[in-house]
Length: 259
Image 1 (cartoon, one colour):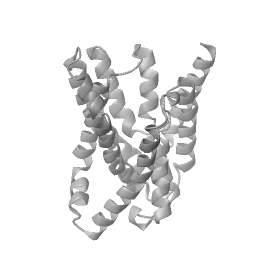
Image 2 (cartoon, helix red, strand yellow):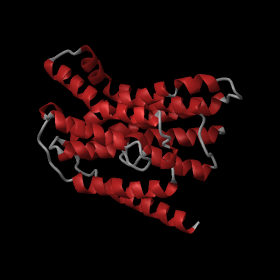
Image 3 (spheres, one colour):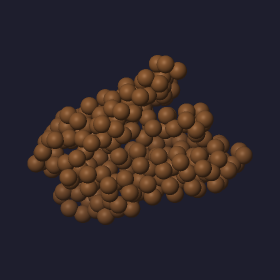
């Protein structure tokens, strides 16, 4: 991986991690376009830390209040975040016994992008009035399972978790906020999960240029993406991303079928 490839993948990771268009799906497609069959684990860890840092930059005060349990609302929200993460731990447990590499297929990515677009279109106009803390245990686990499903490339983690929260009647901006707060432990946990391989690869023909640029690009692009999505969802225009997902998904499927 050269410097420009690292920069491009870092920007892509930062933008697509939070915009509802699937970061994993775009990375699968971009790697094929750039001729990178698999990014080094060292790079994966750095860009994950970059996007986690973007959440801290934009929502650091929320994270601090939740961590300290400064009020009943924050303590309630902390419990709900933990509960919503449980389905993801189930997926991690399954990954120890079954390889998920079969999911990284361009045809499947295209199909799942179309599915993501359908979710965005179907939930984008729902005008809920509930707070996250008003939800039941079943509804919180429903949002958590939605995030777990996003392990499949092409399904947007932010898109499907926001969509699930909207289906539960949560206010759009609060749905996005909870999705981003839920993203922090998920993204940071992904980096920790890859740390053993990270240290095993460290120093093996290491090129620091792509790592540094990729991490910084993911951090900056992620912060911009979070703020942009907050504005878009407050204007009730999140369904616009559905047309993008449908277009890219259909093109990907057609190209795969006729290549």
